[in-house]
Image (cartoon, rainbow, N blue to C red):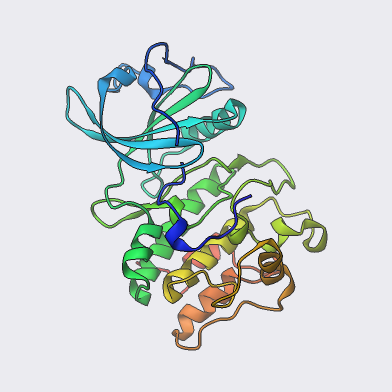
Length: 307
């Protein structure tokens, strides 16, 4: 699991592999149990990866590369995310993306696969990630955070209606388009829930207490409350301009994170914030998931509603 790191060591999109050859890459065959590539739909302009011209690299990491691309015929711009990893996991991500249709979630237009790579053709989010914005601006006013929180909650509501837990809400997985709209991205740690299943994938620094220590906090919750906790960490991070669960200067290693998430009585809530802001953060960062605010409740919270 990833640990929180100092921002100067972070990439906006943690996906670095050499670009794979397009020869031999085919759309995933449609079937009831696997992702049906939208490229196989005659209404889609993206029929093969050769339809796309790579323009520049948007982000790199240990598992893949994200490119800005242009459709050769229509000149429309897309993000192309190439992943080399366990195909059973990434195919699950593709299957989840097929289910989603929301203006609050980054759209997937097509998926292609060969024996070792999956290639996602995604909506281009021109302004990068919320993590990039935090690096540039450091802190945000409450009005901006309120709008951001509302959009993430709208996206989480759609996911919950589809019985999907995102599992890795954090600044680098929240992308911004040219209109300044924030959308949820990256479903590599996501799952469709059928019972008490927390999942071990994701980023430790943004995990809820019940995910870090399920024996202490109980097994009954299916995971939706964990996404609410992660949202609370993100909201507080936007207000403070730094990771909020450890003190300034503390080394955010595994032990410190576990202590901050599970052992400390409560998360420090800045007294400089408005009452509405502090109450919203408190509802998100309630350690006991049984008492934590739900997505439905928080959408009606004074801090986040009608934005």
